[in-house]
Image 1 (cartoon, rainbow, N blue to C red):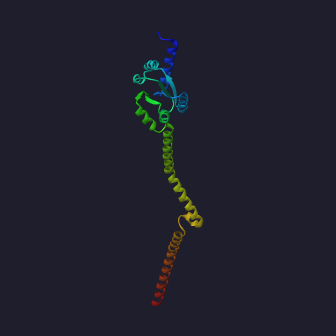
Image 2 (image 1 turned 120 degrees about the vertical axis):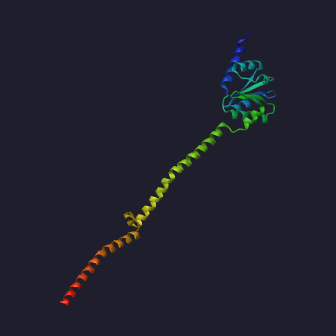
Length: 220
């Protein structure tokens, strides 16, 4: 029969597995208490680093449905239960291990997929979620700016055209009457010529009548 304290410990580890997006198993042998404290601070906000007992962890992993841990649960074991940014947690473990070679990354899992030390190292080389979101937001903002420019371009061109027309009208009011100054004058000249043409025709007709009358008088 399992002791109540052991059962509680298993239940706690099961809960940590269930609440985490992933977990990384490490061998902490050779690390001092201060170094362990530094590691916990380095992972703060992204992972909880806990020293565990292999037997209890093996039981908890089975209850939580986590597979592939049996071969890793040997020697002194501590697990980084990831609850924040997975990439940042992997970076924290990698960077700490570089400065403190006594920390050995055994393996782990992320989103249910088992990962060996090489896969965790590759995960640490990725850009963090915040950086990726920042780049995505920048790309979306650039696309939105381009769309706004394309939508506003015809309006701005219309505004420039209207402004030029207004300036032209101030210089030459006849523009508002249907055209520029010279074409308007030309149209006026054509109108005068058209008006004068009937008058010239009437005068020519009158002269012809008078000439015919004079010729008849002479013959008489």
